Image 1 (cartoon, one colour):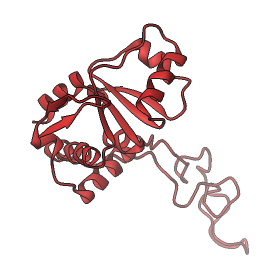
Image 2: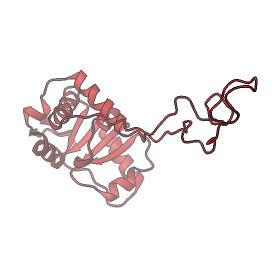
Image 3: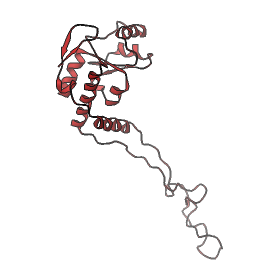
Image 4: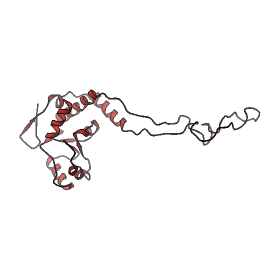
Length: 201
């Protein structure tokens, strides 16, 4: 299939496999959920009765005191005792097969192209790390909340975008399903398109 370059009469031939795939909502939902889950630290921890310091001896004898029997002062029923169902560190990661991940990325890119939210440009670069230069380029493209995809990392472009709200820079290696669906528009260079085709075909 052919996609038109933004603000140009020229077109670029792209792979149907990557940019004309079926939209699979359930798969995309699974990818986004797994990606966000993997980002969770999972470091929440509380002390149960065995982790609280002290309480090694029986507070009083079993019978004859008139009080309820007790085996340790670190019982969850006692003040300064352990937590009954104490939270423990856990891993929230979900397994996603490589084929599923690539199919989901293809589905997202194809839907962006169908909705005219994927803007292909020859190149987007700035002469110096100046926010004003990048803001002017984005104004010419007619986009505001946007993701810019470059073939490789561009430090000048990254520094120029730091102070722009709702603008993010990513290279092809750093693409993920969350960042692709977060923005209204995705500006991508021709070189990035070829790199994505090589990755996903």
